[in-house]
Each structure stands twice: as structure tokens, then as C-alpha cells.
Length: 236
Image (tube, rainbow, N blue to C red; front, side, top):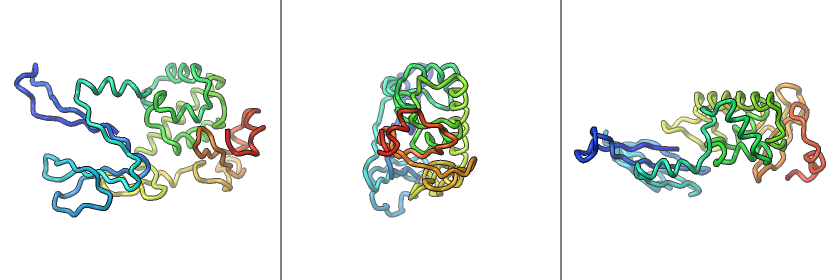
């Protein structure tokens, strides 16, 4: 998450340019950033507070402390963001196809690689692969042009829907206004091990790819031969 900060235009800056920096925030598993009245008592696990122009405070809480936060001056922001991959909502069809062709990683691992695509999490990777009918263990560079187009369309569709519905609340996730997300009601793969596939009624299975639980339909998402050989072990 990138929070852009602003300050009054400096007399020393040309054309009154804004001199504010930015906060680069990784929420981790339990991080939460939301505005509160300044007089409101702190919630447990409140680690940072920022005074807003309207007198409220922007507070960061994180029970498990897996999140991270960094302040970046404007001149350092572009260099820092350069470490991250393309925005999945802005990447073109040609760029996405080239990205896949240049990587021999399993497609689920590539979707989670922040240096390749930024902002794709485990839930939305599984949902996108299910929608595109692609097994998470497939090798990215071996996907056909048609499969690449389907996956890009599925990924962008899933992300747009999830943003509209304020994300997925699996345990204790709340948005900035304190409301739970609603996209979990539309999950078709993630967390549905043993439940019937919405397309073909085959039970959803779970395996481990790139150290993460991965949910898929064994009928709709055909596994590569290598994945079939290790299926009994549940990981690759």
C-alpha cells in the first residue's frame, strides 16, 4: 500500500511543487490502517499514529507484527518502487504474455512474485487460476498464448471485483472504515478443499506451491505430468 503525503508548496521549489514524501506499507497478515478520532483510546497492538489535517489520527495496528512501514522522500520513491513488478491491473496483453514466457517458475509462484507482479495475494492467485482453468503447478513459460490471455483477463476481473467488494475477510480483516470484506462469498477455489467445484462438481483439492496452500479443481484445472507424480506428497 502506498500512502502519498503532501505538504504546502515550498517557496524554494519551482512552480510551487509539492514536497511531501510517501509511506510504503505492507500490512502483513493482520495489519490494519484506519482513521480514528484523536481522543479515542488506542486499540491493542497500535504501533503507529499519524495526525491528519482534520484532527483525526491515522492509526496502524498489527497483532502479529508481520507488517512493515517505511517513509520515503519524494526523490527516493521511484527507485524503491522499481523493485516491484508490473501493476496487474495495468499490464497489457503483450507485456503479460512476455512476462510468462520469460519465467520457468510455476504459474502460481510467478503470480505471487512481487518482483514480477505487485499486489497479487494467495487468495486472488487461486481464484484467477480457477477462473482461467489453469493448474497452479503449470510452468509459466509453457502456457499457450490463449491461456495467457485468459489468465490476464481472469486476474484483472477477480481483482476488480475484490476491490469493489472491499476484499476478502477470512478471519479478522476489516477495511479502512472498519467493515469486513465481502469477496469471500464469491470464492470458487480458495479455502474450499473437499467442496464441489462450482463448474463440474468435482471436489476441490489443496496442494502446496511456493510454500503456500493452493486450491484447485483437478478436473477443470488439468495438472502437468510432474504434478501428478508428486500429488501423493501434497507439495512441490
